[in-house]
Image (cartoon, rainbow, N blue to C red):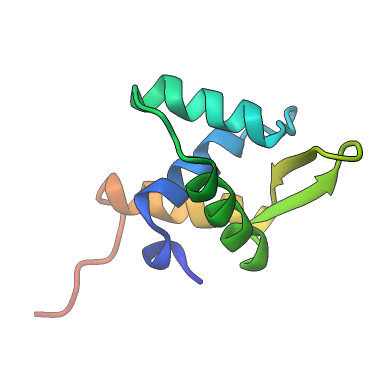
Length: 97
């Protein structure tokens, strides 16, 4: 998976997790996204996308207690996010014409 393969929702998850001092649990991620988007986020959508990012190596999932996991961005996830931001800023090589 590369930056262009990530959905906008997945990139928002990476951006939310791109705070190295924070490893939020799923419920906290859900609340933060809902506050940003102004809409309810379905649990299935959230956790399916987090699992996809974990499988891609962009997010690390660690048990916090018996029922809760903590999520943090990996170096690969940070680089993917930075690649997407550079693209959005126009900091990419123009395609050959």
